[in-house]
Image (cartoon, rainbow, N blue to C red; front, top):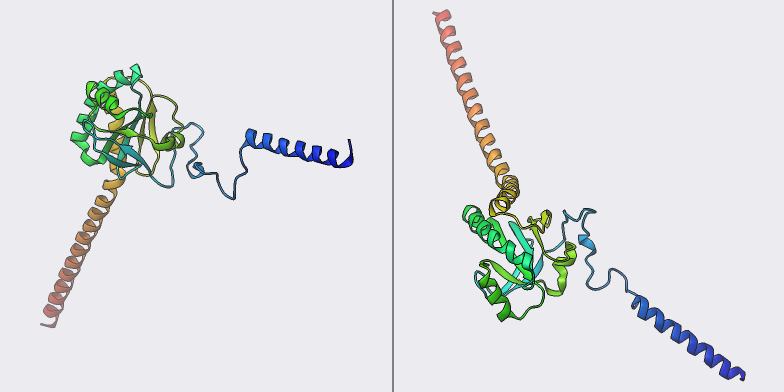
Length: 237
């Protein structure tokens, strides 16, 4: 083998080694996170509390209780997100008590609570039929590219309760009676609504009370001046 053949052989081996490294590790990333990563929304160690920088738009379809479009998670209120599958018997068992809980909670809290159920890629006609058969009656759709599942480390069937800041307050995969779902969710809603509404009202009341006290003080001062003036007039006389 001459020198030229030896050099060519070494170059070929180097190129082959680089190709193997790319296959194993992927292409090197440019500055910043790789496409699809969500470094701003890493969950806590227990996986139950997380806040993302921006809402993730999930896709919703036209079905019973659902309209075609998109839905941001999080949004302005509390969002109850369930990750389901049409082949999941546990999901079927969860839907009936959740349907009752949804009716009761939306009746009490209105737009402050949003329910959405997300599924892996499924033919829409099959999903609509499954949804209607199991009494689903809220937003229904998909999590494009699994971004929401990735943010909250979801694998399989799970229910999440997410506030307006993206923090997850409850995570469960248990089939519960509707009363237990309602009690647990109500405690989260009440705490959220208290933080949002009671503070400003209390401040307004305190400001009003302060003005009333200030007015009372002024009236008392004026009465003192009048009494002093009357005493001075009597002394002059």
